Length: 421
Image 1: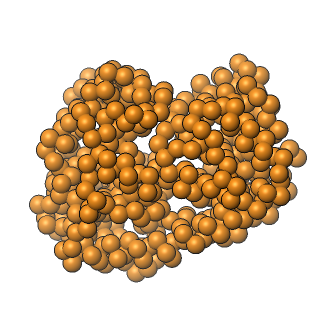
Image 2: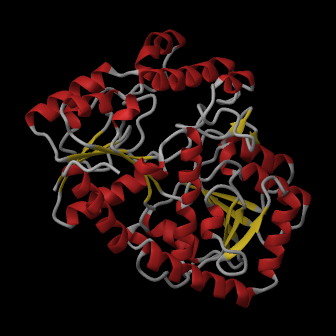
Image 3: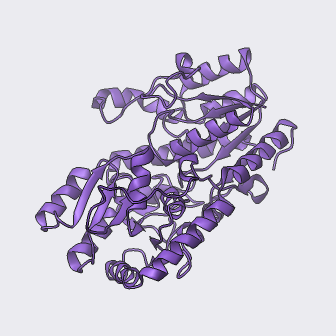
């Protein structure tokens, strides 16, 4: 088939982009023609990116002036450049089906409009909660999990009231306006089929108003680099065992909870932190202020063999998300490396972390509960090893690319034949 993947970025920005890359490579290996349409944010994941010349301009709001951001505001809602460039591509070399991933604030729903005009079916994978929550985090005031789901299926005014997006009134107005604009014009009504990587996110989308006949749960595949058995411990392995945290260094990923738990309670081993993010300086300052320099080791952004080795040499992986985790790529990577996971009982995490089977759970925000589960795992090394082995069996059975990619092929074939879900 001829498949066009559409996403804000074709650069290693986050988990959704990693999933995109795996799908891109996997479908090509199975004989499909696969192209990617994205903004020109660099570096590109494929240096030979065929559509780079028509990539819409990436706007970096963090680097732009206040005036530049103000004048760019209408393009956050609807990007005419993205629509124009995609329209031209669909006229000259149309695919059979378009698969949309993230599009908010960059490509925007303008790409769906272009696809509808060209009469090309669209499937959209929902990678976050933004269709239900304007801030995209389900965090009230950018600090507390919004268990009440104040904006889900409703008016996004609470987002403004609680300053839910980055704690900023202005930013919260912007994201609330984007949701209202998108809903008012019904841009996504032209999407033939939606998919979510977890049941939990699927249920949230149903509560937000997406009809059940247009929604399918189709999980992410285990990355190819994690299919092989875990490597033997490296010669340079630290003498002291460690727990591992892998994720973006921002509040919703829960590192503040982990650091606070370590401050309050004695941990039996240090924690190695893999990742970077906007809050890294704040977390390093917290570690210095509370004398945790020997207990918290920041290792930066790792990929490939370095990331696999970080997993392989750990005792266990901590996934302490403070927000509605939609899948948990770090969880299946940990399981692939035969490591148990200590996870927050939130979002999709309980779909993967089965207490006593593949790991342990603790309640959101419970620093004492997190410390207890760390100690429980530490005190039962044989049980921890067995959990890790069961985790690897789980991911090879449920998330192997040989199972996931054919499901995508079936989805694309169904759409190309004019059958929507």
